[in-house]
Length: 93
Image 1 (cartoon, rainbow, N blue to C red):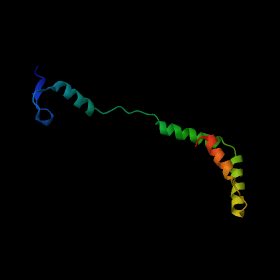
Image 2: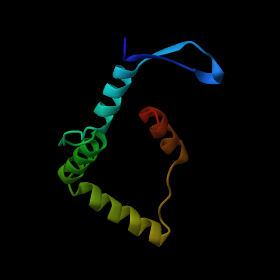
Image 3: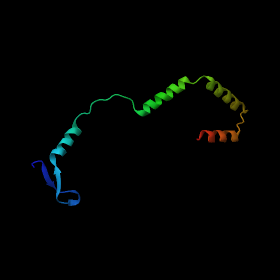
Image 4: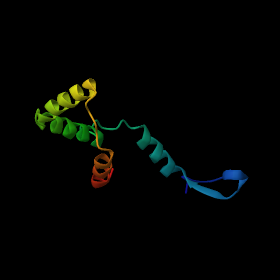
């Protein structure tokens, strides 16, 4: 019974009983150094998967980008707004 004390609670309420031993154990546990852990966060794993996907893509996309860039610079690029809108809807973006 030595570890049980009657304290004043929030707002001055009397009669709050606290187990001091339990409180001390929680404080000691919080003060203990946590063991080191290794691993990667989910964000890091996601970035790694994205990097792998980028490296696995072929150079066809780079060639397509170069072709589009030259069309834009020459003023010959005429995108179809309906096709773009349909593509957005098909992808659910």
